[in-house]
Image 1 (cartoon, helix red, strand yellow):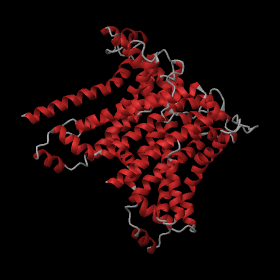
Image 2: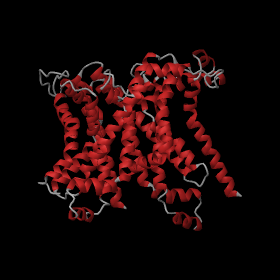
Image 3: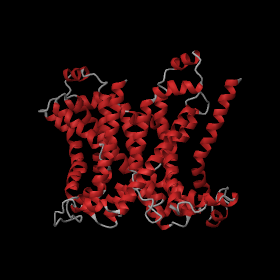
Image 4: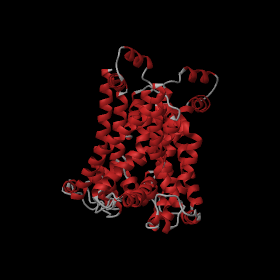
Amino acid sequence: MFKNQKSLLLEIIGILLAIVWLVPFYLMVVNAFKTKRDIFADTLGLPEEWTWDNFVQAFVQLGFIKAFGNSLFITAISTLIIIICSAMAAYALSRNKSKLSTVIFFMFVAAMLIPFQAVMIPLVSQFGQLDMLNRSSLIFMYLGFGASLSIFLYHGALKGIPESLDDAAKIDGCNKFQTFWYIIFPLLKPMSVTVGVLNVIWIWNDYLLPSLVIGGNGTETIPLQLFFFFGQYTKQWHLALAGLSISILPVIIGYFFAQKQIIKGIADGAVK
Amino acid sequence: MKNRDLSFWLFLAPVLVAIFIVVIYPLLTGLYYSFTNWDGLRISKFVGFDNYIKLFHDKEFGDAFWFTIKFSIAAIIVINIIGLGLALIVTQHIKSSSFLRTVFFMPNLIGGLILGFIWQFIFTKAFASIGESMGIEGLQGWLSTTETGFWGLVILTSWQMAGYVMIIYIAYLQSVPEELIEAAQIDGANRLQRFRNITVPMIAPAFTVSLFLTLSNSFKMYDQNLSLTNGGPFNSTQMVAMDIVKTAFTENSMAYAQSKAMIFFVTVAAISLLQVYYNKKKEVEL
């Protein structure tokens, strides 16, 4: 009896905390359904009449479909490139036991210490001088910034894959690239999920780098459009909140489907 | 694979090229620029340490640095207490455990920019509304003072990151062997004693990981700062990352902004190296 009561209490505390955690989302969504006057009159309650107008207007003003497409394209391509290139590099480094290989690995690890702001100003002006501030450059930059952590994670995972597999593949006539692509890379799949999760979350939500590289050239991602939109409607919360709700929706849907992988990916990425 | 194998270099080439062009070359040129009067395009003069000397007398930068330190300390304490608390709740055998994890972790997936905007609404509108109906003066005018801007940032960051450190604490809590706890229970240790003398030492590495992770994340924070307070009122809630961006892209003092960026780099790198050192020391002790 005592035990049951205790876990019931914990259960209640947990649920109450979860409600507190969800309040910001509740406030965002319900107020997005209100008119401007309604928000002023009653911020906390449910709308007197639910209106979809804000969503329609925000959706159009945000250019949401285009922004969503841009975000999806940049995030997917960058993450794919990071996964393949980092896995290849980590494989080469883990199968070469020379001093040089160790030095290169440590260089990658050391690069993780460099915050974005330290290189941002020269990077942007150098690309700007070459007239290369565009989407392809952005994807290339994501490889440069994302590779270190990904290589580090893959390097750890590769320690668990015996080299006898490489030798067996070689005897069967695989060249180095085939060995990697057909034997090693499939075995790295759990780590690829982790690396993918970490990079998708980062790139999808990134604001500062894309604002400097692709701001104003027609390939803006959701955060850039949202920032612009928010600046225009700064005192019109009914529209701003509808815009925010629309922007969050794809993430929530993604989270709903890939929850396990996401939480596991985060845990692996942080603990290692 | 040997050093002289072509394949070794082919496998490494894409990342080596990218890291060199995107990180290493800009860092080295940036270091050089910070000793010149670089304006983003040209350099006409080498100015030695002038930028750095100016920086040490720059009240705005000093304020931003101090604000960042204060914010980071408050944030890591609050985030870790809440994160550990949440982890302790959801690792008990309760039915809603996985639902709770899902909820607590959710804010992490959403960009800091969006979260900042949501909380701007809550602090300025919802708080005011609650304050009005319940007659609490302290809920009015949030984000319009330095104090409320500071706590606003702490609340936002805690709500966002507590779920993240919760995941880390859970990973370590689950590795504590049940037998150990049961043995202590049999020996007559009460709940608090078991927690202090078994759980805490067993999850010590989780504290290091979480503390440094939250420290470096809070220290580097930009998006939330931009969308929640935009540094206001009167730049009093402006953090270092934002100060650097503003100096460079609003005021166009490129070389000077880069000298700030170098100081920022050294600080962040020092924090991370301290963590590595601390972890290694811990490992030896174990």
